[in-house]
Length: 473
Image (cartoon, rainbow, N blue to C red; front, side, top):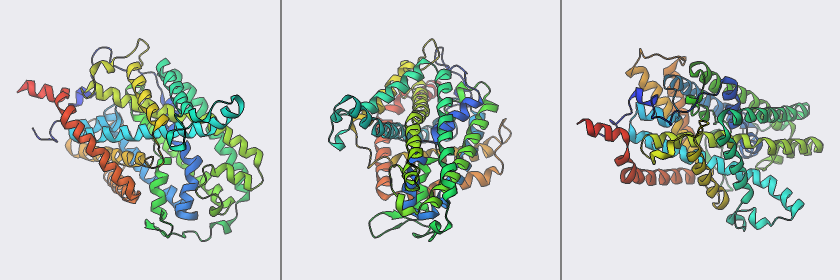
């Protein structure tokens, strides 16, 4: 059997062994909140500065391009998620449509994406919490910073991961309800920023509008700049809706709830981002906040709104765990499905009496805690983007393949102009991948080369689909 012929049957995606079926407890408001919680996070709070440094005021175009590409991918996700309402997201769709080898690469890339996002956000949260903890209790900084900063271990980052994992273990619906409350805090915070900063809008701050050109190019200081270079980084601020598709099995009415959750969260977040970006670049020359770790708070201080800046920073710390919750949720579900498929020990797929995958959640939390606590992330955080781009390309390809392979199959959600949308998503994601820093591209291929070694030495022989096909011969 060829490497691309081993595919998971359609009916196998929805049938599971006793004790491995997740309980449907989520409705569309929970899914929209999960999507907004995952999308609106450290991206808009920090990447507008990074994007402005790469593109100048034309960062507005960078946001629009990244948002448009993600919107095309979101439509493909909505169609595939309603056709195959099973946990596992892009990994599950690829296994059914494109074959086991590609599914493994996609799953391996998603592990990279989710692990780095959770770890990066946990370290970012720790960056706010550690000084407060040290000042109030005298807790040693060596235990609140990783080795890259001269410390021993980043305990606050490990702590917040443990708290979020505990919420997920308690129950999916309970954690989703708390997530929805924190998302409202986050939206109110960004609305406050726009309301305060927008009256300071000055058109002269937009000149020159595109100082570094459109395509990626190397600047004199060794930084790759341009509108597309910024879009490839800003892309981090948009994805997160794919975490919704990992909850397909837990949606009460997946045919209704998944499209609303995926597309609704993308529309809401794109509008929020464009408003925040316009208010930011209009209120202050981009050179004043470019590459700042806290650009929104800096802008507010520069226009004389120091108290509002403090409120924005504090609310951001309170709401950041929503990103952790969404991505830790998604990663645990991907690990769960890979365990069901035989790539991980099957016992890890067993659920608790409350219907939560406790074992896999604990292992996932331990895995990302090691990364957050000890591994320096500055050089590899952009890898999360590369993993996501591969997943988006795979899902868009799955949609196009299924339109030809099974044109009459029931599709609760039909992507409009599917061919155009699918091709646009694939080409857009490929262009964004090529616009990533060269070092990031190299690390991505190294990661997947290691993944293929793991697959051929371990995963392929343990695949349940492969075993079933061998037994049928």
